[in-house]
Image (cartoon, rainbow, N blue to C red; front, side, top):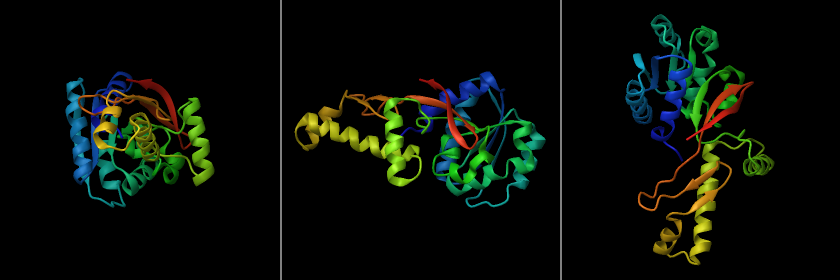
Length: 233
């Protein structure tokens, strides 16, 4: 999996260059939301943007009217939402009701319109822009084959979490095969510096940090589906 430290740079750069420099942050109020928002709260000013306001909302919020009223009054160029799951569904589903997308660009961490939330959001998520490490619409032979097999088995498109689990096990299997054993130290040695090419893209395992590089994609929701419009590093 990626984390905001990997995806935030590309997303902030694109939004500042193509939309504007004034941001309002709307953040779900628990550990994940706050830690994710912290990344963007640091990255945006460092890249020349201004955060003109931030509001935290409780888990399982049903009515976003009070928050949207405050945001409209602030008149940001970009409303940046950090939410996931049911909170992302509820928030995105009310954007059009309050005319938010007609007044500003809506963006957020990739979990805002991830594969677990997007089916419920549908076309109400249209126009939202994010950067993430996976989309079922990635146009490569490896991903097309993976998506076809996944849909046949589960009758739905894979999410970024699905592909992470799949690739994690496949890469481990590749390393075990190379090592010729499941001995921990030998499998670690086989993983270090290795490359894996799968549905998400090409990854290389850093031999020192044991972190992997990830290809990052700019994504826009069109007709209720994730559409990749650029690949960035």
